[in-house]
Structures are given as structure tokens and as C-alpha cells.
Length: 28
Image 1: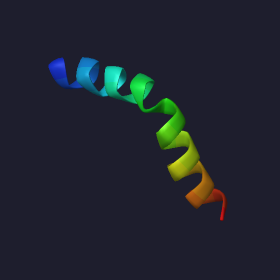
Image 2: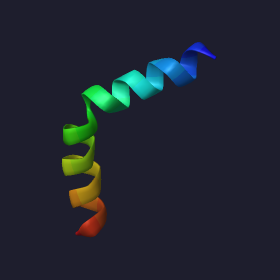
Image 3: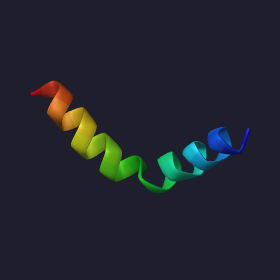
């Protein structure tokens, strides 16, 4: 249960970084 909340919070804080890094890499 804690893992989901932790992940969710982490994703929100790293949404821009994750999207820019993961998304950009996936696109290329």
C-alpha cells in the first residue's frame, strides 16, 4: 500500500523529468 503512494508522489514530483527523459528516449 505504501509503495503505491510513494510511487505516485514520486511520479508527480518527477513527472517533468521522467517524461522528458523516458518519453524522449522512447521517442528516439
